[in-house]
Amino acid sequence: MWRSVASNALTLFIVILVVAAGVLAWGRQEYSGPGPLTEAICFRVEKGASLSAVSRGLEAQGAISDARIFRIGADYSGKGSGLKFGSYLIGPGSSMAEVLDDLTASGQSTCGREINFRIGVNAADVILRELDPATNRYVEVVKFDPAVEAVPQAYVDVSGEPDVRFRVTLAEGVTSWQVVEALKRAEFLTGEVKTVPPEGALAPDSYEVARGDDRQALLDQMAARQAAILADLWAARVDGLPYDTPEEALIMASIVEKETGVPEERPQVASVFINRLAQGMRLQTDPTVIYGITNGQGVLGRGLRQSELRRETPYNTYVIDGLPPTPIANPGKLSIEAALNPAVTEYLFFVADGSGGHAFAATLDEHNENVARWRAIEAERGQAEEGGVQGN
Image (cartoon, rainbow, N blue to C red; front, side, top):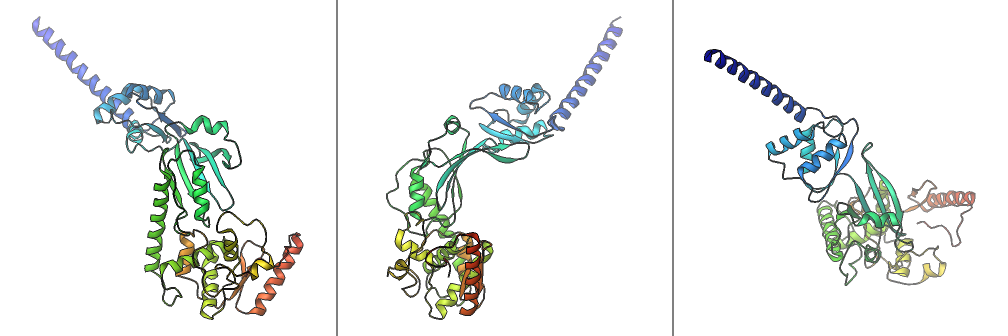
């Protein structure tokens, strides 16, 4: 009898072991195998959320098949206490192990909402956008100019949420005064700016920031980035350039920046001004004249008058020889590179060609023909301006 009981017990124990092994294998497969998601989702981990609450939320949104297995796997891997607050993009078919890695790896949100404060030449605007998990692209929710528009309620509702990401983006060609004035209106930043940075000293780029960051610290970061870009490109410059210092190259880069918005043209535009300097010609470029009028404090908003083209200022390159005393804007990396590695051409002139770019010429006769074509285009468009062509 006892032998029979022992045999039955042993059989039951073996069965239990087999079942347990099967359950364990199934659990491992559920944990590490492909997940149930057919489309990406954006999953938010609340501040202080427990592993239990997160696992239930993942199951409710269809990201995992079983909350209990997720918790067991998280505890077994030692990552159960490492959940990071934020919003995370979970891709289709992600396993529980991959989902856990998404929620614990960096602590930096990979989806959700982003506020981008863009500082442009003509205006600054704020864009609230949200990532669409299905396309992995941001969708604009609201856009407004804080200088002239009331703050939309949609912005107010989300800007204070702790996982919203903030970004400040500088367009190429903005002036330092424009940057400082715009940053004063960035309500998510703090601190005062005592002085406007030197013209040209700030790198146009996109900067990730956090609510409460200091404005001056951000400007210092922009200046450090520009200094590094200029130093690297100055070290790699070609021979024979008409600059004695990196600062002079930065002045030329700012002129190139303001003369064309077509990246591919920048080396040719730089070559025009370098060729003029080599031949003792004046630069004769409108953007420098405009800077002498505005001091970089906003845009002129109209065409130049003949009297302004004749008036002597340190920035009127129709009157002065050589470069103006300072940059006239903050040039981007491509313009600095063009100033230090210009195209090799015989061009001395350029004028708009109607396509958004310019027609270049090596002789005055060729240039006059290009000007005539441009004036005909302007006449056809009904946009001829008083005072002549805004070109060079």
